[in-house]
Length: 173
Image (cartoon, rainbow, N blue to C red; front, side):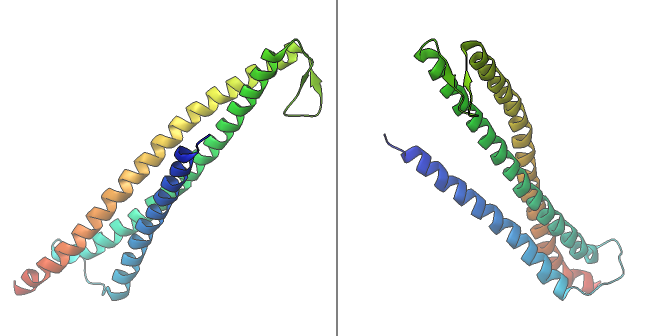
């Protein structure tokens, strides 16, 4: 049986993870660079506020990026538990279809009769349903953090760019 799709999915997950680490690293490194060269000034409305704003945006981008990485780990944990339950349901279904029993309990050392096996299968199906709902919530949160990180990073870059471009005009006044 071919496992190309599984192999490709693993490569995709690895690439996605590396990209997330890279983006968080860029936000953190840029923040550290700007802080290193930052000279505090009196805050007043104008170009001088763009640099501190960019620092706040980059710090927020880094923090939200870390939250995204944590939420991705939650999604993967939920996926693992869901898949484990699905495999158990499949094994129990196969056992139930094989004959009248008794059935070997794949989750423990005892033998089960048909009613016990059906009840255990039902428990795992309910667990899968609960995990499916948890997965939807966690996936939505991860996607929200992903978009927020990217928007904050873009706004941080924009604020840095504008502060450097507009600085000569502010000094000329």
